Each structure stands twice: as C-alpha cells, then as structure tokens.
Length: 128
Image: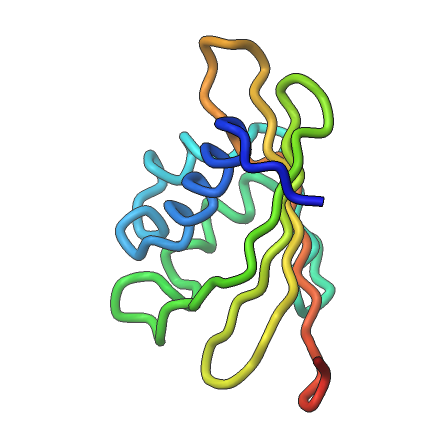
C-alpha cells in the first residue's frame, strides 16, 4: 500500500538524486545520500558496502559518459516507522527491467534522509 506522505516524497527525491549522473560522479554528493551503514545487494547478487559503493559509483552505468541512464517507474512507498521509509519501484535500461527495493532512514528530524539498504532483482524477459 502506498501512502504519499512527505517522508515518502523525500525518499523518492533522494532515490532520483542517486540516479543523477552528476551525483553518481561526485563522492561528496553521493555521501550525503548514503547512510554510513549502507548495504546493497545488486542485480548481479553482489553485496556492496558503503565504501565500495562510493568508490564504484562514478564508473557505474548512469554516471556521466557511462552508458544510458536508468528510467525509473512505478514508485510506491510507505512510512514503516518514524524515520524509516520503504520504497519499491522498477527501472529499465537497454530493454532490461529491474525491480528495486530501498530502505531510507533519518536518524533525527534535523538529519537528512539517507539510503540504508537497497536491493535490485532482474525481471526475466516476458515477465509482467
């Protein structure tokens, strides 16, 4: 169930910023959006840590001059608890679809929303 709250909108905005080529190319900008305890399980099955992701982002797809950008769609989100938002959405790039799930957290009202966890799951061709 999607509840379009301010918290959900802020998490979606953060997610979209992380797809921005300029943010992907900038460690300081990406650092603002990733929680220091960040973990990702990528579409390949690889587990990424905060430091690994910050180091790799500038060379990953969607960075300036590195392949096409992801086309996101079907965002849904829910505030699970104060300071914790769960987002789900899909991306498409070069005809390949991926279902994505992210947890965004804010440690206190003055802190920014940061991605705490992300998982990407490829969608097999022909799957709805």
